[in-house]
Length: 131
Image 1 (cartoon, rainbow, N blue to C red):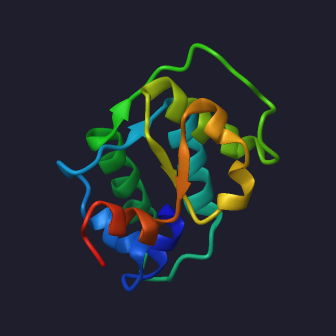
Image 2 (image 1 turned 180 degrees about the vertical axis):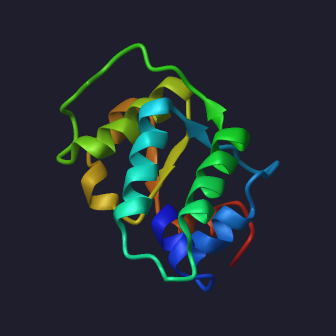
C-alpha cells in the first residue's frame, strides 16, 4: 500500500497515507517492518520524480508518527509470504483491529488473531472519509 501511495496521488492508498497522523486511526510499526518497507520502496518502480531522499523522508515520517511495537514472539511461517508475517506480528503485538492492504489474499486465517483485513478504500469508507 505504501508503494501504491507514492506511485500515484489519485487512489485510496494516497488518501489514507495523506491522513497520517490522524485521530481516526493509528499505525503500528516495528524495526523489521520498517526495514522491509524501505527495501520495497527502494527496489520498486516509482516515478522518476521520487528521489532516494523522498523515500528516506517518507520512511522517517512513518517512524516518527508510527507507534513502535517491539516483537517478542514469532509465528513464522504463518502466511505464504514471509514479509507479510512481519505485518501480522506487529498487528497482533500492538492490538490492531485491522490490517490494511491490497494483498488481502495473502492474509488468510488472520481472524484467528482477532484481525480483519481491509483494502484502503474499505478502510476509508469505514472511518467515514469516503462513502
